[in-house]
Image (tube, rainbow, N blue to C red):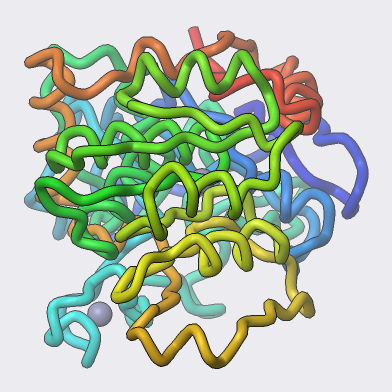
Length: 360
Ligand SMILES: [Zn+2]
Ligand SMILES: [Zn+2]
């Protein structure tokens, strides 16, 4: 099969011919239909997060089940599925505590004795997050898939695999935004736009979108922003404190920078919570004024929207079919696998919400 492979950090992905193993007892082989191009893939490509090479990138995918291992009962060939990095074993401390998205993945990853899922000329090719969606086929553990209604086009369903789950989930599961809350979202890319629609669906009274690009602020209004702040020409924190009369109940950081994480904390009202979704590069610290904690301001991380994806993703699919969750508007452009590096280039310039690779 053909797959977009990172052979060296900071180099363009190469489309290589990769061999994929047969499914073991608990594995599912999927014919990939679509994969979203997410900033996180670029972080690995740029070496901001560690990544062994060669690796097939991609962690936001959907497709059709082609074959299943002998012990798989959840799906069968022909089922439409979305893959998710948040595999959960059901047996570890975090799974039992109701935090399956923090599962340690014990028993869900192939051991050296099992052999690799992907190889090239007999050599191991790594799978990013055990998924590797930038490939014509995905071989994954059954715990990494969720069935989705065939009514949802797969190039839209793929977006539920990371962008939607991460953004909507951060607002609804991690931050627990409720009716009447005032929420500011800093960064209106694929994740930020989903945080905006998550706040709208949760019933927030004011949803303030912050970005440096006017086109993204316009798109933010389509997703449910009630107010916009152009970060290219105002002091963001001062502006938000003024327009809200003292700060927001919730701020959502969807960029992944020290400066924006600090802004998110500094724009909170008393009792407010800042939730950081963005992947701040390893080694970068953020600084807070300790006195701000006296009024019970909080800052927390959110990974993959604190999801329970086998519940959340079918629910998001239904919201889409009902017209309440926007997916079509997220897709800025469709690419072939060969154009994957163009998708990264577009992310760097900030000109797209999401590029989606489709496979014929
Ligand atoms: Zn992602
Ligand atoms: Zn677990």
